[in-house]
Length: 66
Image 1 (tube, rainbow, N blue to C red):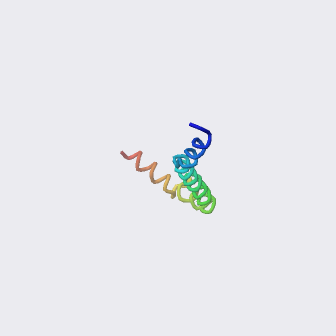
Image 2: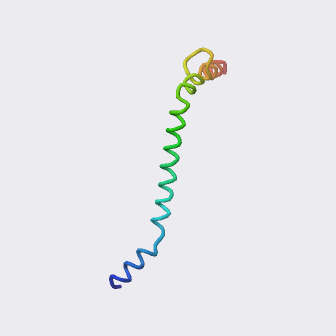
Image 3: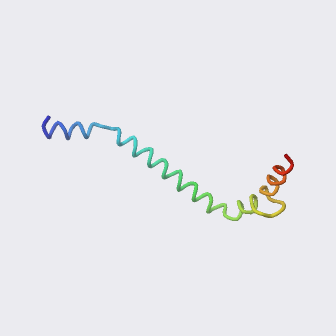
């Protein structure tokens, strides 16, 4: 196999392109998650916070009653 055939075979191989696409999708999902956590900010802390009226306290109370 000569160099030209090797280069053409390398360029025709699309397996690495698929891996790159999955990597870009995973990175985009990470950016979206960080952006949503930043946007909601204190709203999530209010829901799951340590206050007696938050969802965290309700879950703790329910687990204690089991």
